[in-house]
Amino acid sequence: MADEKQNGPAATITVGNVETTDQPCEEFCSDPCGIVIFGASGDLTRRKLIPSLYRLSKNGLVSKNFFVLGASRSKMNDESFRADMEKAVREDGGFDAKAWAEFSSRLFYAPVDGFTDRASYDRLKAALSEKNRVFSTTGNRIFYLATPPSAYGEIAGMLGEAGMSDESAGWARLVIEKPFGRDLQSALELNSALYKHFKEEQIYRIDHYLGKDTVQNILMLRFANTIFEPIWNRRYIDHVQITVAESIGIEKRAGYYEEAGVLRDMFQNHILQVLSLVAMEPPSVYESELVRDERVKVLRALRPLGMDNMRSSLVIGQYAAGEVDGRRVAGYRDEEGVPKDSVTPTFAAMKVFIDNWRWQDVPFYIRSGKRFPKKFSEILIQFKALPHRMFKETLYGEIGPNALILQIQPDERVQMKFHTKNPGSRVKLRDVIMDFAYKQGYTGLLLDAYERVILDCMIGDKMLFVREDGMRLCWSFLKDALELIDEQGPYSPELLFYRSGSTGPLESDFLIQLDGKLWRNHG
Ligand code: NDP
Ligand code: BG6
Image 1 (spheres, helix red, strand yellow):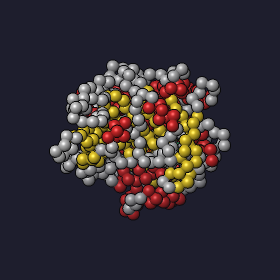
Image 2 (spheres, rainbow, N blue to C red):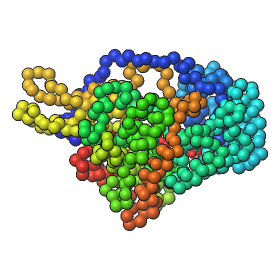
Image 3 (cartoon, rainbow, N blue to C red):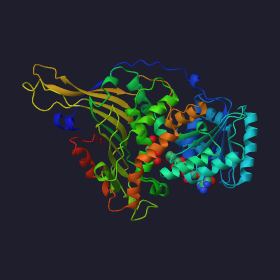
Image 4 (cartoon, rainbow, N blue to C red):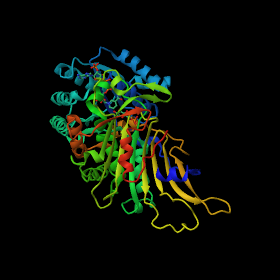
């Protein structure tokens, strides 16, 4: 930050005792239900879904009337599926034999011959009714689509044709993983396909960032305190930065990532959703639809980047070889499965404005990239500079602006940067940081993002899911940028290469420096 450079690093004051009002777990227990996971042999099921369901069960957050039915084309039976999932849970950590025995007695596998094979759905329906009876779920069911996105529409259609979207005996919910389409047009087409058999109320579009505790905390911090809201506007805020930086590359996901790139992977969903929480108006009540209404209003007010301004508001990059965590790493084009001439961006930085009364002319600088030196996601609210320097005769140097820093992950904290007098006889200022570690003083249960969203889906709380209009507005906002990048024509933003282990191309620093500001970086 500009002021940090001028005044040196700030001292840190840790907030003292924290009083919490923890709720007993029982209050959040799910409704009775069965969960069918399509794509049960896949990576997401192994790494996230089953470990999350296991932890929810172990911690008594799911109803006793509950079961999981995995479905995919791989040849497995209940025993081999359970054995594989046990390995996954052990790798995840926190394995407990008794809790696993209880959970795995509710875990089943249903092989399918193909996701468009009608006979497979009839078999699945019969298996589901039998389990519903055994586990007394009153017919409630969740269909979690963890397959390649190209299969979402077909699976939803086949479920509908087999009568499984019908809610006459228990509710039926459809969970859709990201990406929801690859542009506005395909997202609308997917929506229409889902709507043939499922109503909007039955559709749960996942954005796991909304399930992160510290992301939800943005609303608590803003609206459960009186001190922030009066200054949360263009009068006091100079600019906002949102950074989602990762030190990893694309891992083994070249096929997916080549199709997506950073704008589809991180901006269309996670970053724009976080931005909407930072910028939204307070709803009258903390209730799903009202909160979602306010988020959507922000997305609707996003100023289009516009073809003409694209180059001055968007910088894109791709990681080249370099060093991360003391280890040599390959460039994107040398990753397994990536073409040597790939022009897929793995980094983007964007300057965004929100055209409304609260935020007019306040720039939001948003950025995300792979192969940063360090993983960190954070929001910086930079307040305006002092209007008048009454200390100018006594003190030398600039007095930097105040800042509120919301660290989303991995080190979850809220920090307030301000100035105090240095102790001692000389009148001298120092920058200090009031620092609150999010988990400090809390001894209760912690839910990770997937546990949170799965539990909410079982309860039927849609606050953390993306509504149809929100999804559409995010795609619309990015439409021009995506077209230009995909086309790689004369007006396209230039793809710049950055060294792995750096914080993106230099031009992304210029994007913000031209406005007299600096990115806040870590590592
Ligand atoms: P995988 O490729 O690991 O697994 C896909 C699953 O779908 C497999 O079980 C596969 O099983 C089945 N499948 C494969 N091809 C088809 C097909 N043509 N029709 C139907 N089913 C098929 O993918 P992931 O688990 O990584 O991802 C699943 C979804 O979750 C994707 O949409 C992804 O974008 C999303 N996601 C994944 C994340 C992750 O960390 N992995 C993070 C966020 C979202 P079988 O061949 O046995 O049928
Ligand atoms: C996923 C993206 O949605 O989010 C990945 O597809 C990314 O590319 C991941 O690595 C980041 O999630 P988290 O929770 O680790 O910040």
